[in-house]
Image (cartoon, rainbow, N blue to C red; front, side):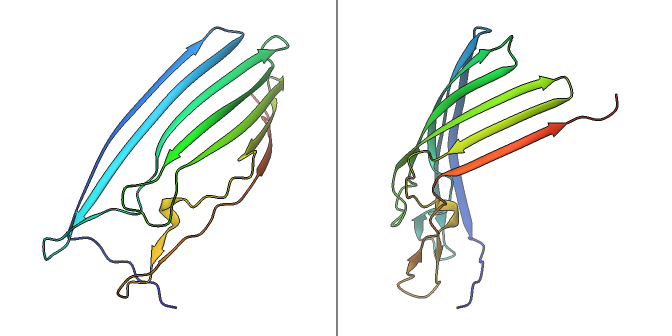
Length: 157
């Protein structure tokens, strides 16, 4: 199998992004959206939808603070809409949870669980074509449940 990247003669991407957050001190909520659309024009003038642009996305987030704001826990629901004309990717919704504990001014622990319900989905940015007519399309599916743990320690002043 041979992979080759080729530039488009002309590509146009349009989009809109917005984010709103409300913080009440003891907790916060947020809503964000990113709507993306794009197409290409070949050297022959043929118009085609861009298959490998980011998904349009709407995310709602809720977080609560405890223990004098040292502990933050929360979650988010993220809806992803497939790019127009993409033959492989589907719309999908992910549920993620997170927690953070600031043990001291110099030490913090973070935990995150992404794709909590193990949704099978293909990210449009990872979809490729063979480049041969009729250009079969291949998808690399994203990992299932992903757990992340991080510790941050600051030394010195």
